[in-house]
Image 1 (cartoon, rainbow, N blue to C red):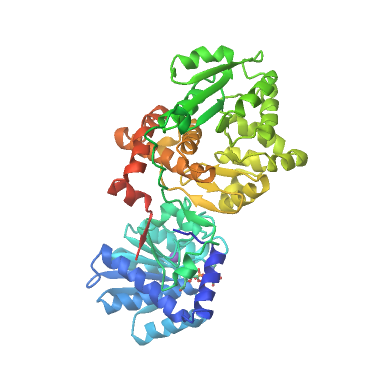
Image 2 (tube, helix red, strand yellow):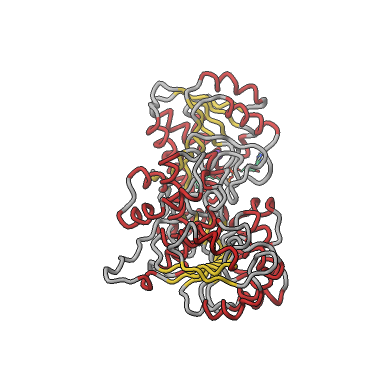
Length: 530
Ligand SMILES: NC(=O)C1=CN([C@@H]2O[C@H](COP(=O)(O)OP(=O)(O)OC[C@H]3O[C@@H](n4cnc5c(N)ncnc54)[C@H](O)[C@@H]3O)[C@@H](O)[C@H]2O)[C@H](O)CC1
Ligand SMILES: [K+]
């Protein structure tokens, strides 16, 4: 499903009204009615009491429709408006007048405490304070009312987005409503899907409010939720070369885990032939745990990291591979970092850079000349940074990144001509053409050492299984999260480690082929339709 920015949704609204002749009043009615239908699925309306909080924009207008629809179904209401109702315009003004004529009790709230008795006695709350028109931090009366709503312990239905959550970023602007369910309109907004906004929204519902598919399902909308891709069938007569030859340039003294997890995950996720180029002194340590990997011992620096002198042999080796991963556990030793920077320009195979590989290339990219050369690399480039590494890559602070994750990602992908996986809860996969996919598999138990190394091998394996590189990256992210979810099911999120994620990769790939069980389908389809 596509996901929209606030500006894109405004444009769709306008197009619905102007091009398709669907009056604003109908859109607002559809929105309020959809919200009412979601409430009806969760609880009996007749005889129950609802506290409805409306702002003075169109989000509040939607709230007034909800009020009228609940009233029509026998609900009892306390309707509060925060601000001057004379500010309602267009459809919202019409709905305000209709609510008044119906004789609904509509109170202009001047003091937050005025809402306390209604919150104490109601059965549920409707939050129609602020939608996509949020432009500044929430303070004063709005902030105080939101605090009362959150303290009420009542089920909260948020209209469009929990009030206080930024529709473009998912960030909380000062304070935000914690909802039980959110009903969003047209399409889910970015802020409905990115944390912390996603977590604040509760169960997420979308109504297309009678928009035609030509509006909400256009190819030009660049942001979407990732839907699992089907894997090409496994040729019965395949040999190990059929399922990809991957080279891992990884490891240094005292970094034995990262190269092992990266290369082993390639094999566990279905890849054919894993070769590991690691400094010679560390090879015996890794071989002791992973003898299914083929080792290519390399000359080492005094510090036990990859020596610069390996460059030509490594380049020659890469030329015989289908996919290269460079970075896990390489160390920050300067000679090795220089080697990595140069290899990152020259390797003529799809190349995934992670960990210390990202750090090396990030230093290079700060230089204009290197950036120009990197953009013109002879084959696709992929980065898999967590937020801190993304900060290093882009030269931005983590706060700046969080304040606008999607746009910063789009900009970096275009700037570096690279595919970037920005890891975290709901990882993002960005492409140089501006597309961004939001991944919904995975859990917080995967925030553990080595988990990122497992991701690198999983992505490599997806190319080995026959997906084109761009699809392999997002499917790898999904499969990795799925393996993590299976591990969490088996042992809980707290104590699981990268080893457990690795161990569940075969089952994850099998489920991708056979179809996900209903409970996982339900979990990954994070948006319900109404
Ligand atoms: N396709 C759709 O998505 C449809 C959406 N609808 C609803 O319309 C709102 C957006 O309406 P808009 O009037 O643009 O904005 P808001 O109602 O969110 O708020 C505007 C209002 O609030 C003031 N304001 C902004 N920030 C703050 C703040 N921090 N504190 C207090 N007040 C603030 C601002 O100045 C304005 O006065 C969308 O979310 C949907 O709910 C349509 O009804 C149907 C189509
Ligand atoms: K809202």
